[in-house]
Length: 344
Image (cartoon, rainbow, N blue to C red):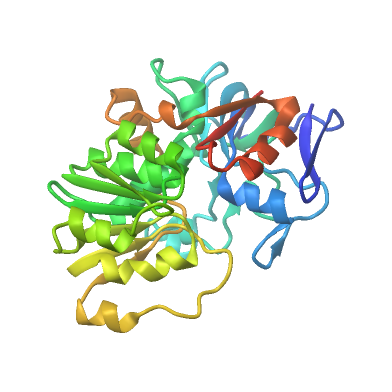
């Protein structure tokens, strides 16, 4: 089968040199159909590492994936050949205190696609535990199935932020994760959603997806515009989705007294300064997001029912053989790419 290998920073090579994996009784074999290009994968592609974690030679990227089952293990009861599935990319141990309390995203022994030394799923066939493969309904495309993973991040963020009917929301960052956070906040009943970003294409997409207002941080005074849009009251719920130190540092100034900050984006470097005095005098809540948990069925139901439309966030599509082009385009044309996706 074909596999896309990250040979070195900024170089992916597709080779037809791997054996189709054999499955265990508890696994299914999935023929991949779509793989989203995620920001963490892009860090590995661009720099060869994410923080202190270095990608080994011939590393395989990709974790936002969906496809069709072509073989089922002898112990699998709920799935069959021909089922289209979204693959939840992390498989926890199921035995630790985090797994047993339902917080399996914090499992220290989780096996997660494209998290070294575990290879990702940018390959023609993947063997995966059946209980982490979620069947897609007939009215959902497999491409939408690959978008269940990023949507789950947005759903987890707004759940932790306890976004509810009538809440006013500020989202710092209008990339894919910022937009799925917008869609999730809207679905939960937020009355006002303002998105801040540097690029007009992302901001126009935010408006198309239901933002009530947008702010271009290159062209406008963000503090002044936030003050105007929220009438000087501050914001109920502030989400930082860019993973940028300046926007993380801004969050305690935007949130209202008694409000909530949710840090979703992962900064590439450690942060030396954060105004905790500003946070403490407002008695705010600060929450952080690491992936998601127990949300694939919810995300699939939301897409299938029409409550959330994720299709529009895909702006660029590439073939599997052009995987290197897909990643280089995301790196070099960030202002125009909202979501890139690879079709097998």
